Image (cartoon, rainbow, N blue to C red; front, side):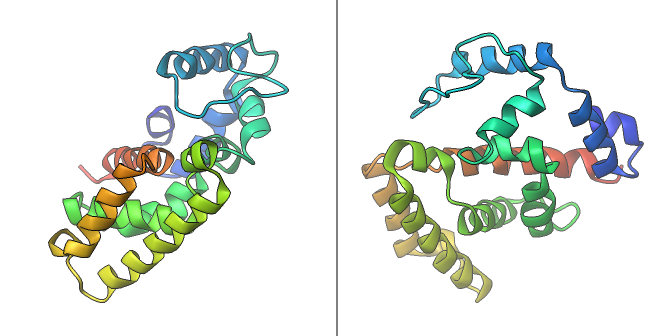
Length: 186
């Protein structure tokens, strides 16, 4: 949102890079408080810049330390590349519909192992979910209406029954929807 204010609808990625470059230790402290308050599942301890301690670096530097193991942290390092390159192309201007949200979610889940699943269940489970998402994405591209597919609904039920929550992908989907709404022409 701060980048949108800076760019007046032109050069959003450049403005976003400026916002990210300006993040300081106070921003890191605020983010750390928010993360610990949210108590995300599977949050372990980090050897450096653990969210339960006061940060000694700015937010972007702290996120860089976690970027290998957390997709949201990686966005701070890459300038939210996954949102611009994977998610936003799934949403034609003005099409924030249930089908559009589903396309964004599956595109992200099919390309990125969900770091929440990795933390809670391991890399192998995350890869299995990612492979399934690739198959569902292909079926949707071929014209299958997933919400009408008993097999798709069964897959969702199976994930829920196994307490497999692609929460990072959900967070990135919401961020993409926010970005789409902020950049939509008036």
